[in-house]
Structure formats: C-alpha cells, structure tokens
Length: 512
Ligand SMILES: *[C@@H]1O[C@H](CO)[C@@H](O)[C@H](O)[C@H]1NC(C)=O
Ligand SMILES: *[C@@H]1O[C@H](CO)[C@@H](O)[C@H](O)[C@H]1NC(C)=O
Ligand SMILES: *[C@@H]1O[C@H](CO)[C@@H](O)[C@H](O)[C@H]1NC(C)=O
Ligand SMILES: *[C@@H]1O[C@H](CO)[C@@H](O)[C@H](O)[C@H]1NC(C)=O
Ligand SMILES: *[C@@H]1O[C@H](CO)[C@@H](O)[C@H](O)[C@H]1NC(C)=O
View (cartoon, rainbow, N blue to C red):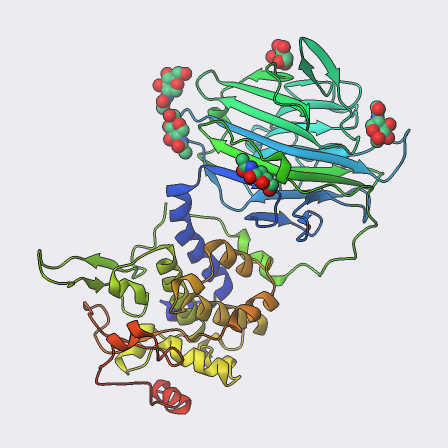
C-alpha cells in the first residue's frame, strides 16, 4: 500500500493523517455526542492561527490577546458531530471579555459560539465581522453557519441594538433576533456589561421538535434563569449539514482585548451537562502583559486541512478479529488479521482502543520505511524491531523508504517514525491515546514531548513466522528489552529466535 502511494509522489504526511482520520472517524461515529471541559488543560480542540490558545498552566482558553489590534481567533472541537434527523442540541459555557483600557473606550469587539461546516471560518474578518463572516459572504445561505454572538460594539452595518448586544445569527451578522445583554430574575430584568472582565455563563438550547432556539445569560454566581433572554423559531435541520463542527470565534477592534473561555459543555439530543463552576480556571486579576511571540506556524498544520471522506472505513486495515475456536476446550482463541498489524494483547484476546493504536503505529512505520510488517515477519524479523534498533543506534533516518527520494522534511519523517514506535509498544497502556496522536501529528504537541515519552525505553514487540494473512497462534516472541516479561516467555520457542540477532544482522535481513 505504502509503495504505490509514494510512487504517486503524494506528500506522505497528508496520507498518514488522512488515513488516521478515517480510523478515528469510526470512534467519532460511534461514540461522540458531547463535549465537557471545566478548564482546558487537557483538550481536543483545534485552533487556527496562533492567536487562540490555551494557557497550559491554568487551562484558561483565550480566543484573542493583547499582542495586537484587529485580531480574530477560532477554537473548534477537533472532530465533527452528527446533526441528523430531528436533532436537538444544548451547550453552556463561561466566558469573560477583558480589555486593557479604562472606561470611555470600546472594548471587544466580541465573540460567538459557532456551529459551522468547517473547523475554522475561511475568509472571515476581524472587527465587526467577529471572525465569522466577510463582506463577501455575509448573508449567503451557502455559509450554513449558526452563531450566538456576544457583541460588545454596535455596528451600523449589521446591528439593530445600538450598543452591546446578544444575537442569534444564521448565515449572517444581521441577527434574526437580538437584545441588550442581561437576564431575568424574580420577574425583573437586570442588565449585564459584556466587557466588564467578569465571568458570565451562556446557555444555548435548540429543541429539534419545537424547532426553537433559546439563549440565556447570567453572571457566574447566578444559576440558569427560567426565562431565556432571547429566542427564535427556526428549523436548523434545513441549515445544517449532517456533519458540523462546533466551537468559538472572537475578534477585536482598535482596543487589544482578551476573549476568555473558562469551561464548555456541549451535548447532542440532550441537555448539556452542568459545568463544575468551582473547578474552572481563575481569571488573571488584571490583564497580564502581552505574552511573548509564539513559535512560527508549524509545517505540520497543513496536515489537518484534509477533509474526511459537528463513511469510509479502513476495512482492509488488518485490524485483528478474534475467533473463538472450539466449544469447551482450553483457551484456543486464535487471531486472524494481516500479520504485523496485530497487537500483542490480541493473542490473549484482550482487544481495546489501544489495539487499534498498535495497528496504526505499524501502518506509520510501513509508510515511512516502505516495508510491510508481515513481509519482514517472513524473514524472522518484525519491522518494529528493526526501526527500534536503528533508533537506539541513532541511525533512524536510514530506515526511511528510499523511494521517497528525500522529498520530505526530516523532522516530519522522524516524527512519524518515533510516533509509530510509540504506538507499537508492548504494553497497551504505554501507547499514546488517540487524542495525543492527533496532537503530535497536527503539531500541537512538541517533538520534545515525543522524545520524553521515549525515555521510558521499552522496546516494542515482534512476531515471528507465519504467512501474511494466515491465522497465527502462539507465535509471539518477547521483545529485546522485556525478555523477563512472563507473557513473552510463555510464548517463545519459535524456531527463529531473534533475540540473538545483532542490529547489523537485523539490518542485513532487510537489504534485498
Ligand atoms: C438525535 O435525535 C434524532 C431524532 O431522534 C435522531 O434522528 C438522531 O440520530 C440523533 N442523533 C444522535 C447523534 O444521536
Ligand atoms: C421530524 O419532526 C417532524 C415534526 O416536527 C416530523 O413530521 C418528521 O417525521 C420528523 N422527522 C424525522 C426524520 O424524525
Ligand atoms: C463595562 O465594564 C468595563 C470594565 O469595567 C468598563 O470599562 C466599561 O465602562 C463598562 N461599560 C458599561 C457600559 O458600563
Ligand atoms: C426575540 O426573543 C425574545 C425573548 O425570548 C422574544 O420575546 C421575542 O418574541 C423574540 N423575537 C422574535 C421575532 O422571535
Ligand atoms: C467540582 O470541582 C471541585 C474542585 O475541583 C471538586 O472538589 C468537586 O468534587 C467537583 N464536583 C463535582 C460534582 O464533580
């Protein structure tokens, strides 16, 4: 597989991320109906550009900062959600808008909760466009964008409320319904200052049977008011695609402003889980000085632009299937699948998400090295061991497929190789999570993180013998450095013991 693709001269990293997204799409299809973050220390969000980001120490998300004026920032959940049938959704989040100026100046611009066909809003502008639209596409039905805007500034172009306002937007900044920011308590209306720097909570609820959107706002120490601030009747299923991304957008004008998000809960077809307000990150007392410029945009970021094919399957990926064999006999479970992609635990019938991570790791290595793991197994060696020993000898680049013709960024291919090895660890719990893998491949986690994970120097595992797709049983041989692993020794005894093979012998075995 790897071979023919490299011949086509396609940038391998794009292929890798494409196939991986297909793999995780399965998880997305089957599992994901909600988002829940009290602070964002550990997140699965994607930011475009380097403006929006999370403070790794506090977990506080900011969409814009004080480094310059006229900013826009976006943060979207990395995977799309399924908006099918008469879907409903519900979300709540806590935000704060803090400018570095005193009174009498305009803070903001403002921010918005967004549901959009893409992760990011291509062509959008800052200022009164809120990072949502541009003069060219504002009002176009092709946008398929739903937003609830929290706008601190009146715009002559779009707004009917002559001041700060909350609005329900569909494809356009000319809100369908909008009003002054505030909330109802004990039958009385209380005004809120959107740009006070104080945290406030927003609830957006869409009922797919009544076809009605409701928006509610309150200070953080007030529980959800019974009366919504704003409502609008609209069948969103005629606006949305089946698959949409959810996230946030913000923009600034002349006054540098922080747009913060402290916590976020989102749910399809049910009420969003209440946030735990006592575990949200704290806001800085006063806006801190501008942060130092961040690193230049990572070259890997292009990888995530690839579209997925908020139904393709890797059917022939070789993921293991367990066949129970015999009714009453002792453990005779056998593993069937494409050899080399099968994680060691499958030989004992303990599949998990991390089993697929192993298969993905083997695939990464195949792609970078241009060698099939099972082909290597025929020679008594597993590709994983070969790459692993080359890394220990500091000659990792020598394993790279010559057919790539040097047309790759060295750090990119090293990342793929190291990540492949990490995914192929013997111990399933030592393999990275799918979220972590996405972070590595999208450049959100650094190379240093990856190296540090490798310092726990556990060797991956190999298999010996067998044909490329034949059932195998008891063919597992322990790994080089985990020779005292009891499970490994129980399954040793293959005629071709590789434990004696020196790295150079191993390499010769590959040189055809
Ligand atoms: C949400 O509910 C609708 C209507 O019952 C249903 O068609 C749709 O499949 C549900 N969506 C999800 C993601 O569960
Ligand atoms: C959606 O709801 C409408 C009533 O609002 C109903 O007529 C229609 O059959 C429903 N569609 C699906 C796919 O459930
Ligand atoms: C909102 O709060 C900010 C920060 O305290 C203040 O500068 C601004 O004047 C307030 N705006 C209104 C309309 O009260
Ligand atoms: C706008 O929202 C308010 C508050 O929910 C509601 O009373 C009003 O009817 C809505 N306007 C329209 C045109 O739906
Ligand atoms: C909310 O967060 C606090 C502080 O992190 C924690 O002690 C508490 O158990 C949490 N409450 C719930 C209901 O999870």
